[in-house]
Length: 219
Ligand SMILES: *Cc1c(COP(=O)(O)O)cnc(C)c1O
Image (tube, rainbow, N blue to C red; front, side):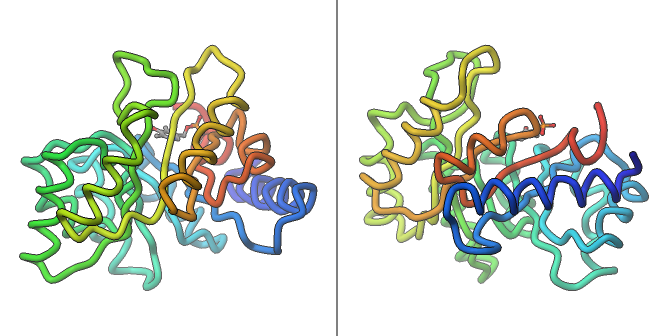
């Protein structure tokens, strides 16, 4: 299959999973994860009509996205990888959504940069649902307090929660936990599900899925 066929296949699977879950049409957003792929490959997805993309590194994104964004109005770029506070200025300048807010220092740096640049990004808090030591994200038990801190102390409107379940576990319980935490925090959006499990994530209430290799091929 060509890239554009794979992309259309993912779109139709998302629509079908949404219908199966009794969700309204177009209520699940596809974030096409283009990390490691070059601008010319990404252009094929843009030409097919995809507008929402995810990248996990600020520096790599700076090498391809300013030009791609200039070419096509309406691109929405999500940062889905860990963020260092010394990259906050660049991240706020280039991205539209940051899904990986997970500690006070980053939340403060992003709040300051948004003020300085006069730009409001949509923000998600990343939750380490599997409490994996090597993985970013706030612990489930600390999530509600952290979301409240972001809102009340920093004035950041947190739109949703994001998780990456442990690779070797059944993802369902992790998706269910994220949905439960979102309810507790009063946030509406759930970014969960990747190439191997996005249909399951939709069944558990995902409002956006981050799919890379099923569209762009193996990295
Ligand atoms: C790479 C990545 C994805 C996409 O993974 P695939 O398995 O290629 O679909 C999703 N989310 C995050 C945070 C990633 O880093």
